[in-house]
View 1 (spheres, rainbow, N blue to C red):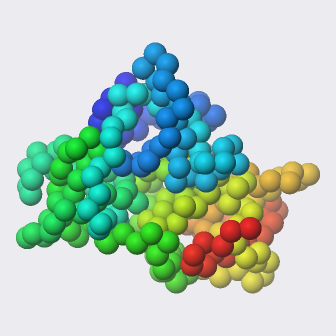
View 2: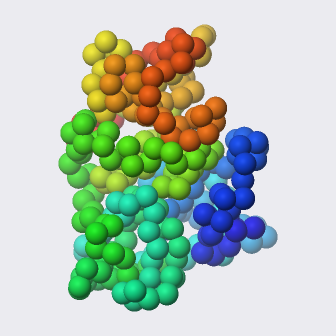
Length: 277
């Protein structure tokens, strides 16, 4: 299976799926790991590793998001250089050299790698497992841990590059994500370890009433008699939301259907650094 290979052939795997197939993945994929993401390995059994994703805050584990990955997909951390870059395109290939062969296809938005040097429009980076590769300079930015967040309007503009990307349960990749995965990914790009799931993120930030929502605020939806949200999105205008759902099958920016409008409970506003409860 393409998604279990190393490197993962994510685009090929996604292209094989239709909507019913995606629905069957609900509850089976916990989350994803981006290239170079640090994990704690708690156990290894029959070629699988039980890990905790340390940069994905969750109530499921005090250290991060727990789950299982193929042991073959783990490697030693990339050698640090004191400077890092973050991918700003939806996805980009890591090449062996400027205009060289593809080493790792479709590296996601918000992936962070140590920078070695820059030359002629290319950034040379260290890779996990003592490797080295190249990225187009136009598709990365200097990474800053807990860096400044963009304005609400700029946050919306960045999010809009993902309109049309398919819904993927548990996804946090520029080629496929779920509702909270998109928001987690956007904050990660700016150096913030934002909660992975909507129910955890609901506890963060400043509470904003529906009538006071501004572009860039995160909105939450809760079903009747529930205490935790089941869905979230990004406010882009009066009752206009950028979000991704199974029913839409992709990331959309538009008005709310009547049923979902009735489930909209409030918004949260996050400043820099991301406000914690």
